[in-house]
Amino acid sequence: MPSWHPELEAVVAFTGHAYVLLGKERPAGALGSLALDGLGRAHDPRVISRLAGLRGWIDTLDLVMVRSVGPPTALPLVERPDLASHPRARFAACLRRDLRVLGLEDGSRSALVTIGAGLGGLPEIGFEVEEERRGQREGALLIARALAALRPTEVVVACVAPGNAASLRLLWSVGFVPIASVQLFGRERPGGICSAEPVALTEES
Image: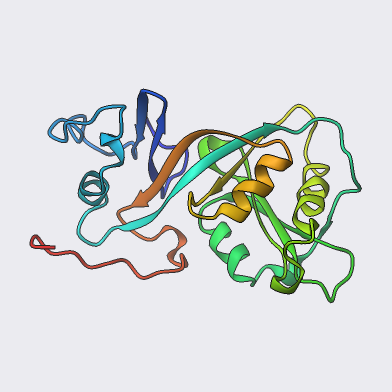
């Protein structure tokens, strides 16, 4: 299928089937020799490396969690342009379009939520609570306030590394459910600002 983003491509795997989302300029036979299936093969690191190319950018494998927004249960967060240089906000800006950076009214707080057009063009959120305030249910309140900034009929996506057990538990506790896995990649770094330099592979790597 064609990708939703001009600089990103992806593999999205569900139960028993997977989608490979490629740029429109990709030749029709780009997948022909990769022997893909919907039972895990689409996420084979060798497949992603080949599609991204020797100088490509490859993101981590993430779990895709979703929930419907529903009626607001808390006051919405406020726009926090002063947090736009935060590492999480900068990374989100190179993967999502029309990004909003939200936070608390207290300007001394750096907890933030990013919301933008992410996977499949759906609203996608990322969040971070200050390290010293973690484990105090502040993340749950932060997400509830972020959802209040969205339309009640929307479906919102959160992508999280499978090993990030704390965020997985938090998202589950506020109504997100896992539906798929995703790995983003590109033949160049999107927006030129993603966190890590591309790994230079050789044919022997």
